[in-house]
Length: 308
Image (tube, rainbow, N blue to C red):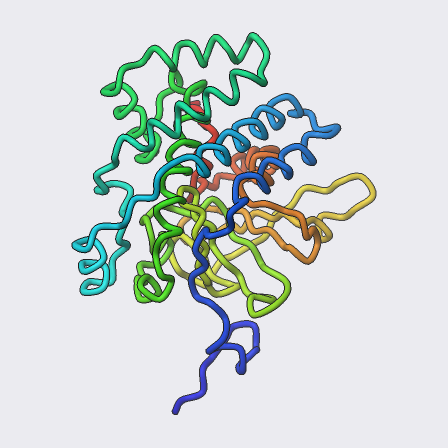
């Protein structure tokens, strides 16, 4: 039997370390809400992050209230036979459940938010099903318009809730053979970021985190997550008061081969980090990297970056 090669040098952990981690935690979005709240303290974008916390609490309520839909046998068979994600976001036939999740999120946020947000909620609530489906397609396809900006966090949150619920019904063994580099093995979406984990069988391993369904999958530590090369990689970080950039839990992994970047988070430097929340709290890093000519390779579905 050949000796397995693991990039972090832990040869004996190869059989035990999970390649795919499904979003099966019952408090998935509740944990995100707590992180948003913590990050909002003293942050220049504090009000925005607190709104995101309420959206996450709405997601948690919707996740608990919504029905669980089994993944179709045909999709599972195609995934098994062809090694493709069974819930491809671009081709999956969404049920009306995602719109029920949206309604639950809007109801929660309406009870907690100020007048400025209420106007956006009112406009979104008046859209018919066809318009909502068009918005959902734009969010999933990365083609949102500047006019959609106020709607994006709510549409994105509803879609995350819907797809995370579906992903949690799967068996991780059924998607471990889906191996298209850089996309989620469950829903074929791009990652929001990567995380170097600590503790247990995942210690010192890097996992990409799906921007849509929150599934995590293992990737090599030193490799571009967009073009799969190990050449021309650099790491950029912001200096914080009293801490050098090298001590930051957040870095941008840039690739000179494809001129893209994606953030990488180090849990050993902050055990409480949550990729979607920490990504939005570090938008200043995106601005820095964008100015140096790199394009972000994965989205945050709670944020519209603008067309400028």
